[in-house]
Length: 114
Picture 1 (cartoon, one colour):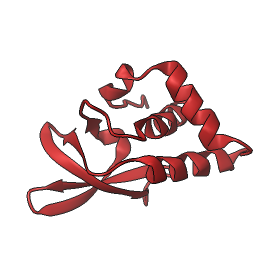
Picture 2 (picture 1 turned 90 degrees about the vertical axis):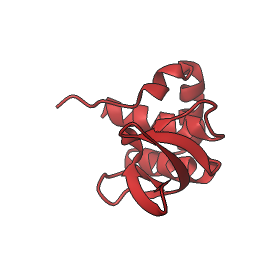
Picture 3 (picture 1 turned 90 degrees about the horizontal axis):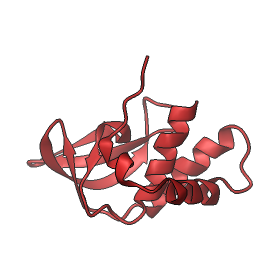
């Protein structure tokens, strides 16, 4: 199965993503790398920020470790007056990207290498 990731990742500099990866996984081995990336992505993202899910504009208000994907992040999005947990790989971040987005990018790229 081919993994398709959000197109916002193509606008990120590969060297910046690699730097975020190295910072998040320093002194991590094996599965610890995934945990380090998840922790850094959740801690460093600045909320709220604008995004798009299924073509609809949403506001991302929080993040949490994924309940469905090992070493994943769910973004908590507001649409209307409701909140939904959506896998980060299904959310298109809008320009300007929020502070901390490179850690999320590093996590998504790490998943694509597994």
